[in-house]
Image 1 (tube, helix red, strand yellow):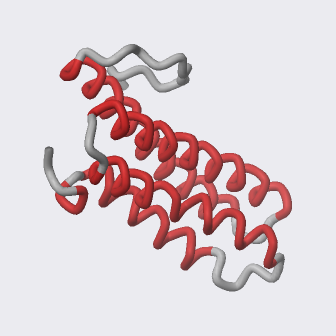
Image 2: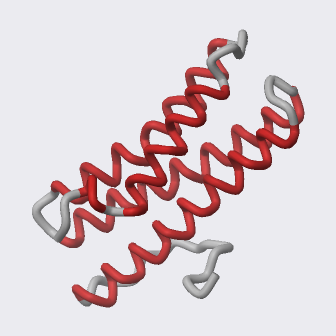
Length: 131
């Protein structure tokens, strides 16, 4: 397998985390800011950890964790849109970025399952591999 730094999904996850940090820098709700930043950082961190693990099954597990964190970021962004620490356009752009990462992770997990004949996860997603 490749190093995590070479993976497009890791680079996109890192960019999402950086954008979340920059966007919420001025948020005075420190608890909310901390939660969304932790979720965002978990995306590239779990991708990196998964790629450094010793088996495809472990890698898949950490990709699933990363995908879950991307969903957590999207949930926080929907809340942010309602309580307005950011403007609607900015939260929409960040949500679209998180969705792209989630879709890539879904496809990566799917390819791991196919390539290494891993048991299909019980996960469900609104993002099929063809989108």
